[in-house]
Image (tube, rainbow, N blue to C red):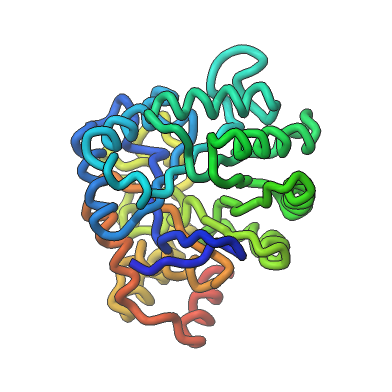
Length: 317
């Protein structure tokens, strides 16, 4: 495993991190999730990314991870980077989502209890709240860090202007923003329109989620929608309608480049996100151990040539 410094902080993160958004919830096979977490750690993945509402049901991914931690990884706690977030809906009523101090601090306390932890390494504001002053949300993160419930503060899915405002407020409070977690992939390049520049200017790390565009940037959908795949499930973020012919055609062409490089399509997509050195790490999702092994194997392949990058750009246009 290779590790990258997260912005201008003292923290290194593995270039491949494991996210527990899907396949680690209460409806999923616990032993399969356990195998994936332990295999990831054996491969050098030390960063495990969670949020309060990962499951389903909400909270169950943290509960399952807490069980794995207690039974298998507790002696390695100081070798792990465990993160959580709050911002999306978690419980009914006026205090169960968005960015109030009430919600963020209560949610952090609940997450720690579910995982059996005294602290998380990074706690994020999961999304900006248009109805709560940015100062309140950032002061909540500052309080969480100062109270010892998190070591670092982060933000997720904030646009460039929102990010700069959050960074400035956290700096003034004495709790610098460590990292931003945006979505980023070949098919979702919004971070290139100013966000990465803001993060670089301020010395903030960037950890990209959904680098495979919910699985579309793999070879899985080249011949239709397989039974049991994410797009085949009614409650999935990736809908069957998202598997559009024009996108599949692009994946077919990209897959040819991957083959020439000796890579799978998914590996090409991950390597492409990491081509930008402002990206500290990519967060992968997985449903089986072999997918994690494939992701880590990108470290065995050379960096892109200028000709390869030009060919990829031509396909993505």
